[in-house]
Amino acid sequence: MSEVTVRSDTSQKGGEKMPTCENCHNKWKWKETIKKTSTIGPGMTCPYCKKTQYQTKSSIRKINTFMPIVLLPLLLQIFFDIPGAVLLSLFPVLLVVFIIFYPFLVEVSSRKTYAVQGKR
Image 1 (cartoon, rainbow, N blue to C red):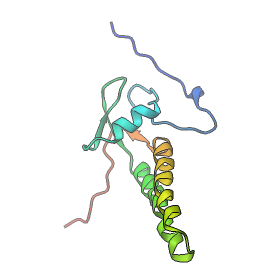
Image 2: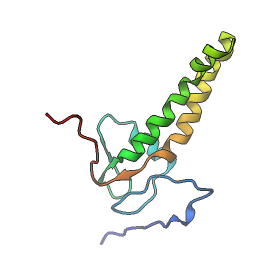
Image 3: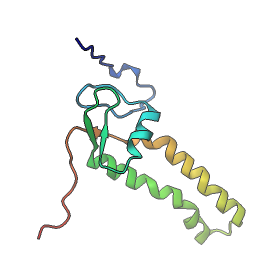
């Protein structure tokens, strides 16, 4: 007999939303989400039920909207005279901020929902 543990959403603090498997309904931890989303293939294996999960289109859209914030120092350089040392130090800081918040933007689904590029 196998035992399945189902976690409820009551562990959510302050609006934090980690990816939840559609099959077993377990929430992924921050570290697990970083590991699973840094793979090359589109599918991610749930750490609990081992079923394949895929990042949703809305999740990809949110991440792609948030990602250019890392390049914000380049935009600031155009409008303000910022010293090079300050400019270069902003990149790693913003990258770390992006990595910290990244798992909270990830949503997973048991189905692939990618947009089809141009019908021919």
